[in-house]
Image 1 (cartoon, rainbow, N blue to C red):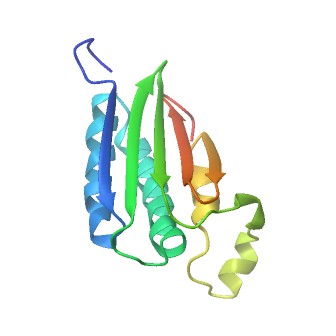
Image 2 (image 1 turned 90 degrees about the vertical axis):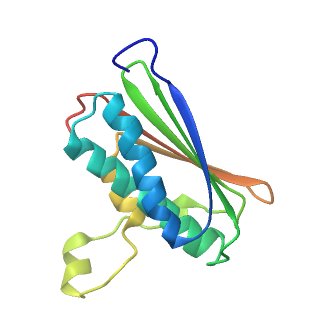
Amino acid sequence: MKSKSKIKEKELKVKSRTENLSKIREFIQDFASLAGFSQGTIDNMMLAVEEACTNIIKHAYKSYPDGEIIIKIKYEEKKLIITIIDYGKAFQPESIPEPNIQEYYRQHRVGGLGMYLMKTLMDDVKYISIPGKYNQVLLSKRLNSSR
């Protein structure tokens, strides 16, 4: 953060509803801009987080509107770390194949690129899933990163 008095960690808890995606975007926008990220990088981070949260709403909670999504954001060592936690159905990221983008567009497909987008837009993406307990997505972005 630009000054020592700024908050270095924040948390947002929302229910698993698509109308909360705007709150989540605002949360990321406010924190990342204070940390000194460019608007283009912030837009990429917001898209990656929105994709992760949309996947949680659709897949982990199967559109159940009262599941809990916790977003923690932390800035340390010139890196923003976003942790997204849910208590829905476990997810195995290795079960999602890497998409062939040209084939994807040739077939006019819609959806299914969330994982690809997150990996493309962020510097690092990690999943931790403890079946029956929780799922956690860790997204990180270095300040002045090239992507």
